[in-house]
Image (tube, rainbow, N blue to C red; front, side, top):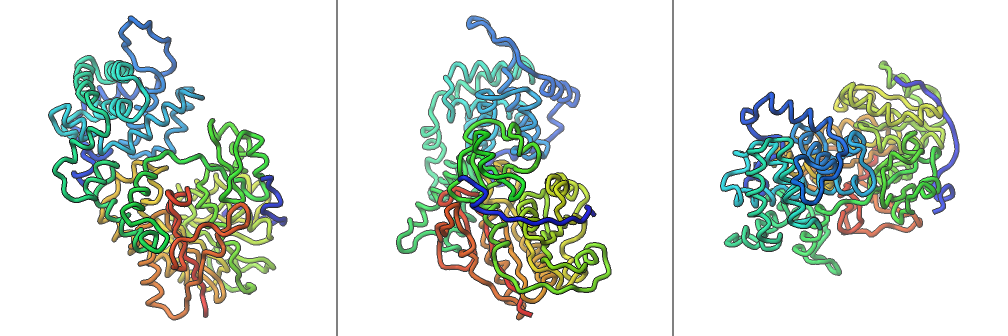
Length: 549
């Protein structure tokens, strides 16, 4: 456990100046037959990727024999994602390793993340150009081709430059034979623009959502799930709302847009003014947020020191909402394990719990507010690795003396181990992540329909445990970064239907923007569902449940 500490203060505006669904994604990331790859060749290629750096520009008349640093970095990200990495976490590391900044870093980022977002469409184009299925192409060559097609169809890169530079990348990392193949496929790809390719690829497709899946590079099941989510959360088709088709189109388009970089100034540790002075801009959505129009967040001292961080504004808002909803005064309890023993200490403050805290972003916001108010926060994770991630995220708070405990345990057991213990519980449950496809573009290719049912069963167990761990009069905030009804309103409904000691309250009043005004409410349900195409955040879900006895 981390050392327990305490503190006091205030936060708020006063401290701020202001993706195997062959129909949509052929060749899943990381799902190719490894036997197609020569192991030693892969080692040599990966070593070159790791060691590549800046190179002198070739003369205009010279045939480039190696890829430029930005494209090499983008390829490194795709290779890492094939091996299971998360693109949004890998990208900053690769940029630093390749010493890229400014326009080169921006180009590499758009090239890598944009390619992953639209790879389902690009694989169809590549299949036509190559005359073979993407799964029959060596994985590194396929990644190179995807990068080239993205430049040709979705970036402002001249055809000659996109082709020649991608061929050079193939020559360096896959060999001369592969470079000729890449050249031929890209020449075919460049014969049509993206709209023409979409028209050709969807010709004869009768179902409108199947067309949407191809055109927007989403698996068909995801398109269906998002349509269901918009309908289930009353987010389209009502009075004064766009039609369901129009809302779905807007949501799919938003998934393919690079999100703005949102920063959080952790209350009591940093202020929005400090972020603004470092080059960020005021957020009009979260009172503790700023947005970074360009540059590396790691260059901001407050971010390096974990007093601030990159965090979606929707995640910030739900943490604030849980902290703002009222509870009755806490009473000491008796318990027989370390975390519960700590929580039973005499205290005049409240006991808060983040049940699935990793990697720690929401815990940091909760911990900051709890620290300012003299409360104690308990953070739980299911593995030591993720627990360590939480500790790292909370470093500045712990150094500042915050009364925080971090432990490892099965969240499904906390309710029986620590019954009626906590005043406020955040359950940010494991989910499909379908609401964060802008930031985690590989998720659309990794998830499958059967994941939803498996995760929903886990979510029900966790939510029941969270409620059991909450004392009468206390509250539970159930959150997911997925709008799928099976993971959101259905989970809440199942739990409520089986219990008589819990009521759901309207959570919308606790979602206020930077001006202390209610954010745009969608539908009449008491649960909050945020949308990227409406609110500019990830599609976060939040339900507020109160323990009555």
